[in-house]
Length: 53
Ligand SMILES: [Zn+2]
Image (tube, rainbow, N blue to C red):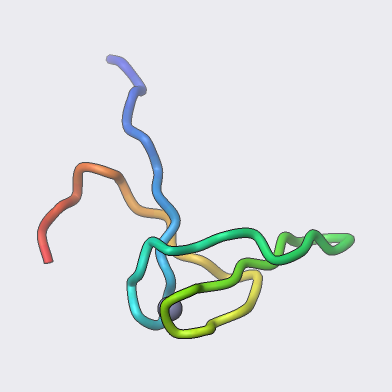
């Protein structure tokens, strides 16, 4: 059993992977979506190979 699956961050609003860290708070990291402008600590984590839309 190998654990080589990479995780990608996805925007919960538009499912874009254009996600970057906006800031790091005391308890959570804030993310920012370049696609739709979403900003928040909640982000989707998906397997990189899950390439079905
Ligand atoms: Zn988005």
